[in-house]
Length: 114
Length: 113
Image 1 (cartoon, helix red, strand yellow):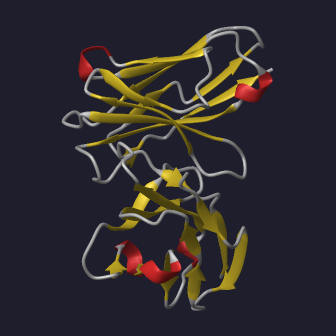
Image 2 (image 1 turned 30 degrees about the vertical axis):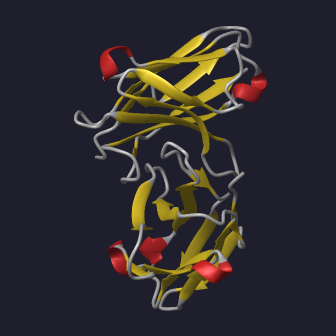
């Protein structure tokens, strides 16, 4: 069965610091990969997605992620975080013949200190 | 606003009661998903519809849970004889077709007392 691991439960950064959130998945076939964000009190929103092509994917609000197939990883990065990036971030995957339902990681809570 | 609407936003019920939640997806989306999210966890897949057909169910969906999507439009999720372990956020999502972005609603937070 597919699974997604997010390495950090809670990350605390100061504004302007660089961010990298780890995500690994456990499926050897073709996968589609996603990062979703949930701001306090709001719904899940898509940050970025990878289906095929360039493994470096750019998303909204300056976020990017790199798909490294050999490492089964899809880490999220941002060079300089802002206080408004405080949120919970979820990595998700679908693939393996599933009908498109997503398998989510447990999430990483990011707190950015002003 | 994502366009996926869920009702109610909050529901408090006594153990043993039945509850029903509604989801209205984005109008042209033919795929609809239900997820459950508990504290400290990511959303967990419950079930999926393509139009009115329920095509996949997770083993998390016990016999007390039933979902429908009549006419391929809105969907309902019913939980019978609720238990305290059913307390969670129930999320609905819709997508245009397979392997496209899923849009999530705000969720229905269920508390079973």
